[in-house]
Image (tube, rainbow over all chains, first blue to last red):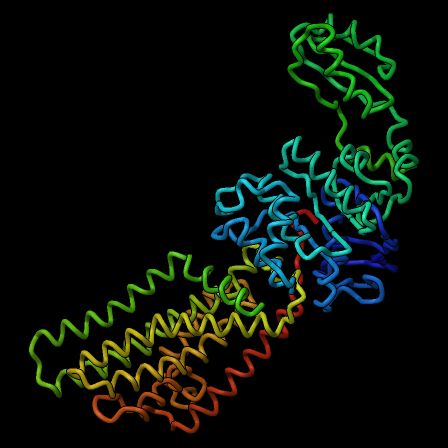
Length: 303
Length: 242
């Protein structure tokens, strides 16, 4: 088992503080790093993966500092957020090259295994330049886990991946965690973190705003009213159906728009589609109102 | 590991349209030598013309142009587009990454410059390989130094191509022409000194002594490679979103 530890880590760019005095440890299992865009998630992940020097503090994988110690990459797989890829290689060539550079003994077999794990076999012999965003994402994941590292760091791994593949990638990460691996991924989407991780770190404006068991933090984040607006083929009929749902606290029909209030963000989002189906109404739009993630996170910081 | 790194670098370089255009530039020097030859000059005239063609176009234009484009792209393009992360996230010593990229960039530069110069020399000298070999070897050695310098430059600034071209045009083209004392740090003069020493007929007389050129050239090359290794091990990757 590997442990990533940060002790009093800060990082600044000139006068801008991107990460401010953060300390935590990440061990076996899946840990989600949650925060709005620009909160410092990527800076934190890059420091953990040894791509950025901490301006202060210490980042280690087990006993080894990650900065300027390329040998730690025997034990780390990293999936960057950026879409950059060797567009002239096929997916298989890319994953094989990754295996060889990682010093894997049977690179071809390891690459085939990794490609199967991310379900990229059908596209493996096509050039990455022609891949969709989701296919590139899977190729990157395959390249990161081809050397079977005990630690996997993923920066926004579900961006651009379609829902079905998102589920299968979540299953893959769960299976890897069940083998005792240390998996850390970042996301700005609460639902992703909720579904995948046992433990969560919340970063807001470069600081660690909360860390620990997901349910506790989730309660902090969701025990507040959320508003949604809905457009549908028959708002009135849908409103009647939704009012019966326990997670709906208030329903309002105004200016041709159906507006809902709930105390449970996730449960509501899951309740709307079945309700529409029961009512025989076509759902045109479901949108959280006045509810940027930033506002959710700043609410959390105030608590 | 080294073979993988080399093949990635080579494919990335050869995949660029620019590289193909540089190949055409190399073909141009061969074509010019051949066309002059077809005009029916005397052997001396042809030798003299080809020597000046190899020195004033081959060493002075083709070599630095190819070296600056290939040398700054070998690592620079990966730094620009972010694919460097896939190399940096591997347990490969940074010195190996730099050395492999350097050797591959040098080989591509050599292929694009030394080979056409050898051919042009052989054609211009009516089949005698002496002139072509002399300038070909000079292009290889000059290419080594240029590639090292431009590779290091690409790790220092994101404007390496522009700065490299400015060095070639302003320093080597103008300053070294005006002030003899500055020629000691002109890579073109190093290459010309080698060419002069290796050719008997048709070579253009050099303005630097061979010993000086070789010693300074070797020192510059070694310093550039050391600097590049150091810079690569300090490269930081920032996210797009913070």
